[in-house]
Length: 442
Ligand code: SAH
Ligand code: SF4
Ligand code: F3S
Image (cartoon, rainbow, N blue to C red):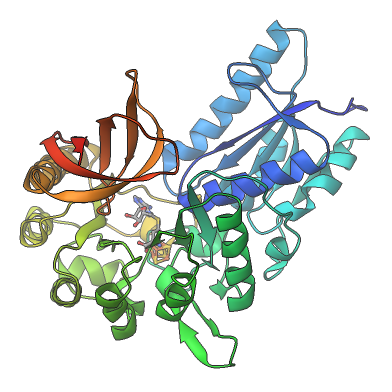
């Protein structure tokens, strides 16, 4: 490496989960504080941060091809972009990236990116640096204030995971479970609302494991935090994701029936509908336990929309075991869901288990599962037609005079008429497609 000129523009590209989106926004603020401007759309940036995800195989390969593309494009334009790799691939494979991709000047883990400005100074002096330390909570303390935000904001309240599902890298890339302090979160939520947020999604790898102490020194769970944030008068909507069945509490379920601002939507991954597979995954719940939990949510909030995550082709999964997953899907009737082919991750116990399932079998199972999930998503949308509900406007639609936003059930809704971003408008849902609904103002 050699001395570099200070970059004038940056771009942060985030992959993976919403916690990475949150982290990406924070990194952008840190760079802006260094006097670096966001690169205009369609223009190459002087500094590119690849905020990576390690959850599945292809994600890692994508990082290397992105680096390759950045270098190639830079060469063609006679310039050399400064590249930083952040996020979970940085955490898991920092040294390998440094060795394999000489164009990368900075590698920064998801718990260390508050040190990005210092690393940038190193890079300007021609030194490459890696920081994958995991100091507890430090990155949050060091974060700058946010000035203006979109109507829909993310707020990381909990990070890390102690569950060690046997297929998953998150406990290794994000570290142990920690909860950010109650007072800090209330303060950050206030700032978000002052800066324009109307909806806040509380984030965590196991968000419902969040715990803290309220202003009076009482122990509170996520429901307590939700109730406190619901007092912010300009905040209209609260959501949270992702939950783990083992951390679900009666109090949080009850909050769904009592706190109007808590939206009727629950993302609760299950992964499989078969108890042997769930055990081999170290999921600590059964299919029946999961279904019972959903029943309790439905009792508290009958219109709640349900969402889940699934993995097909976990090592040893038989056809009959896979069919249990289809049965569970039929029993739940998901409004939305995410399904993946099992991907062996280095260092996880499942990667070395016997009876890895053949790729063609996984492909075929994923297709069958997704056909059902798509069917149910469309059915859920169709069943919503005729409902009157609020839509929080997020952006303009493709057509003139068209606006796009979300229903309480997290459906994408478009409508025409007078509105502005951040408005909450009353609509009647008129037409349903698989991925969105058309509505008319009422
Ligand atoms: N903490 C959350 C989500 C973690 S990652 C939870 O426990 O549910 C998001 C999803 O990615 C998981 O729910 C799982 O469905 C999927 N996933 C994780 N590791 C995977 C792997 N090795 N192969 C395929 N899918 C995986
Ligand atoms: Fe991964 Fe399981 Fe933790 Fe979710 S609960 S992040 S799937 S180890
Ligand atoms: Fe990916 Fe890390 Fe999130 S592995 S899913 S970015 S926690």
